[in-house]
Length: 392
Image 1 (cartoon, rainbow, N blue to C red):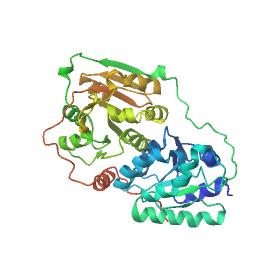
Image 2: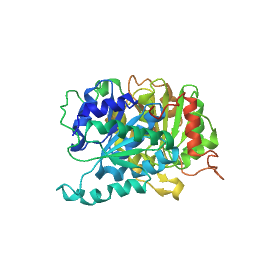
Image 3: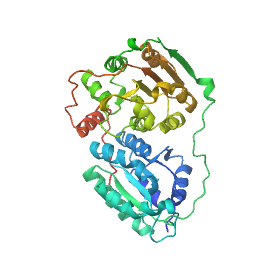
Image 4: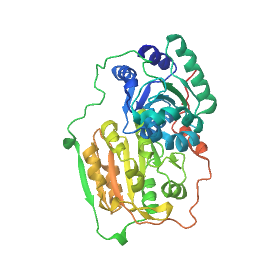
């Protein structure tokens, strides 16, 4: 058994100062220590997949990050670990607890995951070792982890067994305090009530590009046709095209916006993606700042897979965003909503617009002619970020 301080301080010496995840009782002392230290940053994610994407956003901003989760939630993280951190080559330190450990008498729901946790990490090509249980092991473990992360630019996992860390009391609130959301909130509607008059995705993207200054603004486009059409509209070094990890664009944008307060971060989401990870609305509303703008282009279908209907037709995403704590929430099918969004003052809170568009895409829609890794490296160079891997 080690003290939480021993591991966290050794990790801090290597540059790790950002933590996110979903709690587990095995992790409680560790999380408490991080929360108690005002120099460290802890983001409480809605699920483990969002935690991976939040940490990835911090990492590309130059903030080495740690993701903490129970192994029962490792399944929630499989998609971003395989189609975000792997293909973009983003190194993260994962700490995954081992519920269902064969050495323990645990709850039945943990039995199978306890048996397959190690194999699951291996299948995802994520190297792992057990979390250190004595102080002498900490430095060598971190050395091996960071050496791999430097060489491969991919995640490295530590599996934590019960009792690895001594108890540590929580002395600070884990959630940032906000002013009353009603006092700072702006809500408007821009509906024309004529579906046939809705603009196309490409028209909306072109206007968003016109409204953003590439010198101080970055644009993250969700997977599918959105990223491809943004590339077709105007490829730029300040654009990041998500090609997988559906639903994670907003959480990645949150991590980036928190780590780089000097940047304006624009996330372009889709209705299917937003529905898939709606819990991140609450995380953004709790932690996000005025430098984060969240735009949802809603055509009520999964366009790139055959235009199967989503359930978004009856959903008020703007009201959801308002209830979650966004400072500005706009909704409608009039493209003027975009101009209003970029000129609105949200005080200290993120801004959101739900714009209805029509289905369909461009003929002979191209794919980016750069690999995801090349897109990310270009993006990081543009924002002046090149330190995403801890120094040995």
